[in-house]
Length: 458
Image: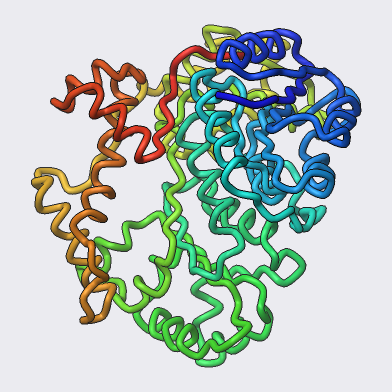
């Protein structure tokens, strides 16, 4: 690596570690705990890359991004933040930060992203940001927080799709926050000042229903809530409504906890509606799939209760162990309701394991994740997806180069899941996959896979 990097963070340990690591990598480093000092360096023309925290003693790193872009167009900024919420990730994307990393971050991962940012700066001169600030409603603190890879992947996908016109299908179990994701996509998009209309089965019960929905939505956003519950007649009305759209049509989103693909194959859900709604699929992970986020969520809900005038509470270590091991079939919504009940009923400041057991009814520990297609061969499952891909083209052949595209689509999740299974150990992963370690390294680089779960910085 070669270049001058400006580091801004109020944590001395992080400044020291980053300075040492970047210097060893061949870079010059200027580090500060002051946003004012960082901006002075930027204005003086110093630096080829900025690595900045969000919450600084004298300002907000995200709010400084437009100023940096105006002063130094093309200067990449990597945002690091302990505020692991969907708003932080989306605001970073809106302000056109080069990259966003939650704390605690992976040092080798950050170094790799820094090297990529320096390389891009040498080759490309990005346009300055002209992103609008989020609306006040969008700034509200949503319970979509998390630092696990599953949530960070979700944040980045939301940031990528929020200003496209593609329809979005948000899937996930009950209580995971599907409607909140859809609302966040609207609130952070260019349509944020326009109506957000949530449509249920009752809104489509009459022939005039779709026209009323369109009239209310104008060219804002329409969300079909639990679209899998619509009956055949309502589905037909939605299809006709979507086919009637011309220019300046509203953004279409839908949520579903049901497997629409299975419903379509069984003839319960219309195929044409499925393809019209599935421009981009956003899968919201269950709480079982992101257990490491439970302490962060608990802290969020305790703080929310305190803001509402309730007593401040916290879990004992034993209590938290039980909370983490519970299966949470109701997901984040059940966790929030449970914590609120504990805040109201627990006599002590510290909530004990006995208190939690009393509320949860001493339920069993973590249940295994439910899998789909039990007994089905992997080749059969892949064949179904490939058939759907061909069907999407309506009788026209897909573009040339299909073989390599499909291989990449399979290879990417295979390597990511394998790396996660071995804790990021590339030697073990190569052995598991049965390929040479150098081959694995090349594939990781070519596919842009971020290897996590190594050295962590708080």
